[in-house]
Length: 260
Image (cartoon, rainbow, N blue to C red; front, side):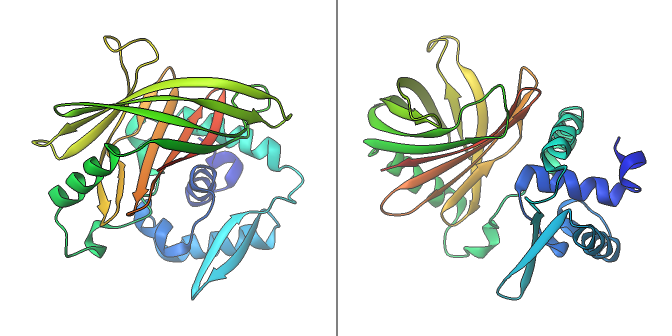
């Protein structure tokens, strides 16, 4: 799609991957996109030399990200968002990286992880969140907090959330949301639905499955009116964090929900 502009498919894949995930390293791209490592490394070096990317080290790993000082960054991100929304659904999923690997936790099986997370959900009482949007005319940007009333019935837990959030202009707005979690023990997943249309007409978001000893990630990307939803949850004994990524014709957002 962008090959005629980027020069080759490797550069196209790198740019879309960075648009979705914000940062990357060579070996990660090699595995995630099934692309030979040497062309990936050469393309990353060329993009950095041209000023489009910057890099830094975390330990011995060299990470790349978009250079915010690049003069056409805003226009490039709009183009990449359009290119991403036109990809086939399954190909979209390939560009979202799961940050953890289940094999890193050999002492817990998946059922234990799901049970621990399910128990954690039932004890939630508060939330805070941060939202970041790169869409000029749509989306929301700000932070907020609120209370969570939990209702647990059999294999379902409903979050009734109420609170207020402050937008980037400083104005405060009250909000209320209802989310429903469902534990399917046979399938080994916990699904998340938004009940903005009522309990009888849920909006399915995604299924979550263990990706590490204390993380769950969306099994598949979810398409809703052209928007693609991804999700990942990290939890510990004190709280859990739900990270959302939403990309669509009018959306380019990332949200972090902190539940305790």
